[in-house]
Amino acid sequence: MADPGSPGPDEARGRPSGAHPDHAHRPSARERWADFRTSAYWPAAVLCLILAAAAGLFAGSYTYQMAKPTPRHVPIAVVGEHRWPQGLRFVDGMERALDAGLSLHAYRDDGAARDAIEEQKVFAVLSRDGERARLDLSGASGASVAQLLAEAAPKVGRATGTPVTVRDVNPLQSGDPRGLALFYISLAAVIVGFVGAIQLSVHARGLDPLERIACTAVYALLGGFTIAAVVDWWLGALHLPFTQSWLILAFTMFTCGMVFTMFNTLVGRWAMLPTWGVMVLLGNPSSGGAVSWPLLPSVLGHIGQWLPPGASVNAQHTAVYFRGHQHLFPYLVLAAWALVSCAVFWIWRHRHPGGRTPKAAAHAARGKGSGDGGGATAAAPG
Image (tube, rainbow, N blue to C red; front, side):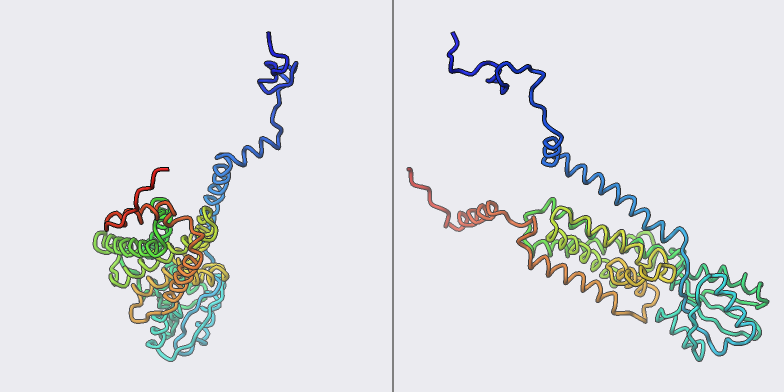
């Protein structure tokens, strides 16, 4: 006989006595949402949406710049007096054909104009050769700009009755006819730089701050050397000033790795979002590597020079094609990003998800103590 005070079978199963099984409690929509938010499906769903958006933005950022590059401001050197009738008609015709303004800079002779090309101040030199116009292009200054000028000049010359001679006085290397090889090696350094830092955070979480910075520098040096060796020594696509190009690539990889480490310190597991945004979505399309800066929207052209991808392309481009006219600016940009990233990581290193755990540190201390005879004494029996 059942005890009168004991719960009935329905009560023992969590239902009021006499309640029908079909009337059991069903979670409400709010409760199901709360369960979803605390489950593993929530971050997975967020990541699916983020990755889908990142894929679209990644494709769109490059397509927007490369599908229809439009010149907006093209600086050109002019030797002597260009205001003879044919010259004026030719300049006006070029501006209409390009739908852009030609910023004309006067120079006293061909030597001064060529120096302006070497300093990367102008993309071409316009001069008078008898009754002909001569347009000397610099393919190395920007392949896309040189192509537009080379295609437009003969058509404009015929339309305006101005005979024109077009030649490339500073061409790209034969293994890089489109000028994209430097962009690709810089892109490799950028992406592998921050992906390497991601892998360190996953597979070497126990690294202390100085160890993490040192490991980032090591893989940057090794990776930069490998990129330069493959492109120059193995494939022969480019003839690089090897040591300088290697160090530029290594500097780029280190900077990008430390930028991710900085964001990982500040925002934790979502560090990939700002890193991807700065380096890939914004930095690479505006770097001037795939599309020369006169063909970019003016805002992007200015922003790109201040980001690591643009600084890397700028430094590498100058090192390969304008060796006697080095610029300090891109190195200062890379140095500023690297120093700020290292400083933020070091100051807020306690927020970084990596580093020695107290348990691991205690284990290491015990191991060190037992190794030198100073191990912990056994606990007395209670």
